Length: 289
Image (cartoon, rainbow, N blue to C red; front, side, top):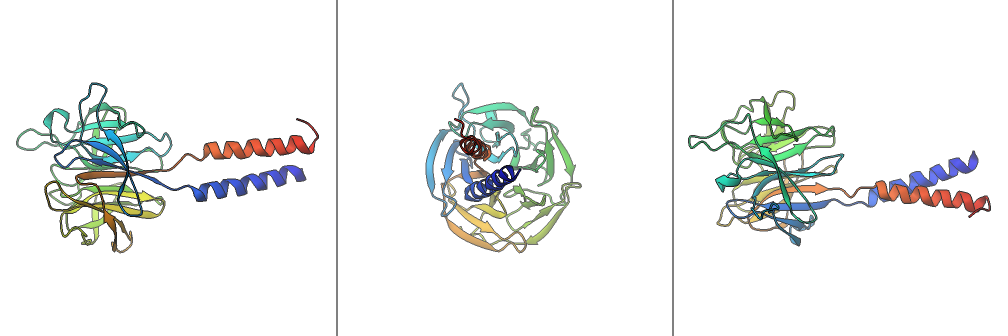
């Protein structure tokens, strides 16, 4: 019993050490009227660490991406496509983070369209801890939608109280609070039950204007992507204080970047190694091999 307790204690320490050493991997995707490409971004300064590749499907069709989010339990990366070009508009897709291969799930349904018949897409995507997917609509107002990951059906949670979308960033904190940047002059919270938006502040834009196109939590740290004025638009990676909206500029990032999402390395493999080490230690103490 004493030996088992010691091994469990050692395993717990190993697990804690492994978990605390894990760092979020930041992915970014481009849209903003240009072709879609997937990048690995340095979260310290916004620079591109790696160009994963063009966001193409198996037939070579390219998909600009306006929002991304990793499923909290499966690790699957989901994306929302931009509305330009029309041939690939308003889709929910999955993205292979290793290759940038895009697989289309379907066209968003249950969303409004503009006078030209273009369906709303999602300015950003976010999962809650239970694996429920949400998005902020780009047409008809920055309203909150719940999204079926199997069909792309979108259901309105409720009105945000706002009429137009500029930015549309969204992410949900580990504590379950949904933060958003529905317009260029707003940073605040969404009520996940009603869709109502509550403003906190007009956040500073290091690019001199524009809006926050994406938000992403890495643990308790909230990152934002300022898409600034220009063609193609320059972008800036920042951190945002969730309580006050205070912005810290980290640095310029990839032009036309429109979506960011953090993936956390899966610690299950590390815990398995710890278990194996504990079992080996037990066998050695018993004089077995």
